Length: 424
Image 1 (cartoon, rainbow, N blue to C red):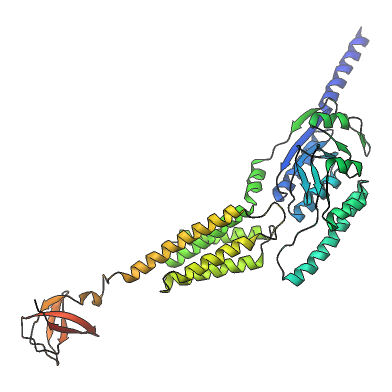
Image 2 (image 1 turned 45 degrees about the vertical axis):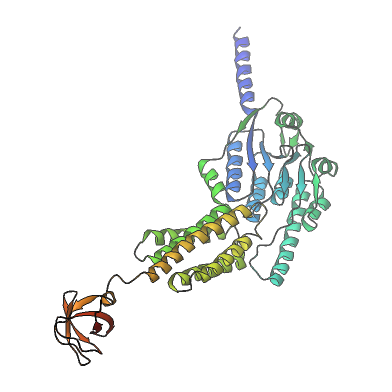
């Protein structure tokens, strides 16, 4: 009896352990690949390994992203302690540009029906002139062709197609990818994927996924923040804050807050530009616009320079991210709206400046011109006296004016007022 009880307990313990082991981690990547994505995948791989998951499934739908982040993800795949399955899903999804490298670097590459993969050629970073940039892009293209070749050879995939996806920007459907041995499986959904993965051997591990529990690993709050933060829209907002803050501080010295906000925004912008490249010509045009805005605030050009600044700003915004990786381009709606907001902002400042210049003087000696007072003594071309604004002033007149007669002040020369008889 004791023997049967021991066997039963052992069976229960083994069953509980098996049930615990039959777990699959799942994360979802939908959008451009960036630093937050790389951090999310790295953390998920460690967590899945610590939980003894059968594998980590990465549902992927991306147009591409940053090369540095893609390199980090591929390295994490190679060093992973848990099998990695990249699943391009749902139907209609794509693995473009950086997504091709990530998919092919996985232990198992899977696609949903009617999805696409391809066009892995790196794009220009826009940091050199056309000739230099062309040479650099050729070098970068050659380097990443070798990277893709290495990945395909390591995972026993179609090397020739993998190279052509870089050199010729080739793209294919999931059905074509399976026939050409670019991927391993086509699965309609996650349950179908787990069914097909069951019994598959990866290195020295056999997957048991048929009845595995799928546990999704969500993004952390920090990862979600940086995923949203590391976008061209955010960089454009930072640029606007920097411009508005600096201009506001220059036009209202001592306000402090606008200057501090502008400086912080500029520092963050420079920090982000180290990862998300900016087009130098676009930056130059926006700096030109900034200079024109500043000059027009202090110069009596009546808004002409602001008009030129708006044109320069629009062209600069249009060019600013046009060489950024796929998924990191600034939408036209943002370009137009930020240009209009900037135009309204600076037209407001310039119009206020023009109106202030046209207002009559409200303080100083010039305010006495046109006023009428009585002569304190006889006034002629040699001199005389008047009392105005609580002070005695010397006065001269081309016409002789008797004491106590009303006079009108017509001008000021140094500390002497020019007056004339006041006529009704």
